[in-house]
Image (cartoon, rainbow, N blue to C red; front, side, top):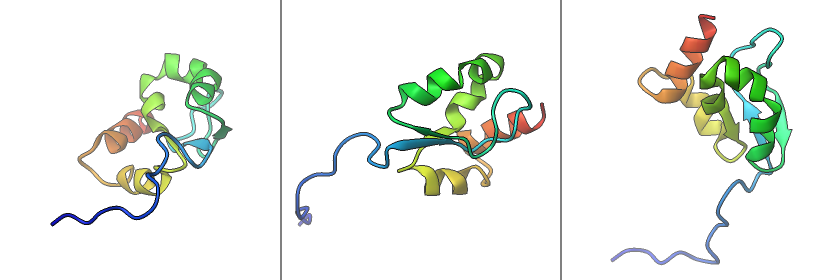
Length: 91
C-alpha cells in the first residue's frame, strides 16, 4: 500500500526564488555562479547574448531547487548537463 503524503502538496515551480549559471566562464558573456532572482524568464532574458552565442548555456541555468543535483550531474559523465558543460569548456 502506498504511503499517503502528509501536509499540503509542494508548490509547482521554483520555491527557492533564484536561478544560477553553473557552466564555465565565457569571457564577456557570462560567469560561473551568476545568480538571477525571480522566475525562469529573467535569467533567460539577462543571459540572452550568451545563449545566442552558445545555446548550451540555457541548459546550465538551473533553479535553486535543482542546484544540488545539477552540481553533481555537471561533474558526472553520461547526462545533458555534463555534455553541455564540456561543450562550453572547449570554447
